[in-house]
Image: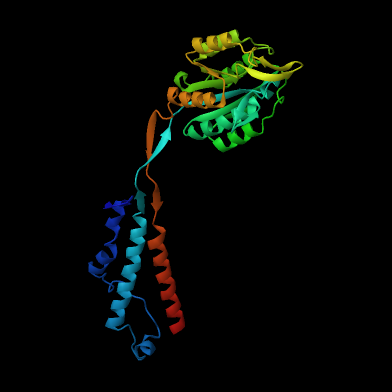
Length: 332
């Protein structure tokens, strides 16, 4: 192992170095006695009168040096040299976070603002969820959309790019006009029940109350508690808005149907937290708070990039043998 400023150069099979002196060993061993066995050549007398030829001492030395270089390169390649880079810390949280987003008809309300313009509640949710998804490096994320029924839009995955794309493709009314909160929680429980208790979280966002579905939020909450699923609930929508009426503008509460008591109960019994988002800024702060409640990293794995280098000495050895063979063919 050789230490450098930006990494380490090491050999995996260092024991192969014992094979390097084998050619030298064969050179120093005593020659084999060839007098015991001989090959009879009937025309030996004709061969004996031919002019003697051989390799000169200087040429013989060059051949030995070249062969030694090739052998050394082969042994060097067999040592399996590699370059080991500096340690790289990989963020690993081990958490599985399911995002449940309400797509019911009431999410089309334009009581929230984005960049100074009145937009739908769903548009605000998409805008805030994009950076939240980007920040959750090391987590497995999934997406549930619910209206009349709950649908698994994206299974738990590390592919945050695909998750963002599936979120962008979600449209109002895609899952129906009503709100099946219980079904959304039940679907999350079904998909995450086999995961470790401390590593599964559901972040449920809605602007209304449970008006559809076969499972009540109370029953779904009990199932979530039994399986160790922690639920953070978010109620979205402004408390007041002005609309045009026959006698001028009238003040209304666009979040009158929001069932805060139910959302608080779900969060409380599962160990989660209830949040109220009355504006885009509040929703952004809520997801930032969830980042703190559910830390991004619980441990770090260290990875050292390795790059094999055996092909370089092996390639030089093959190149030398190839050039050597070509020169001999040309000369002969």
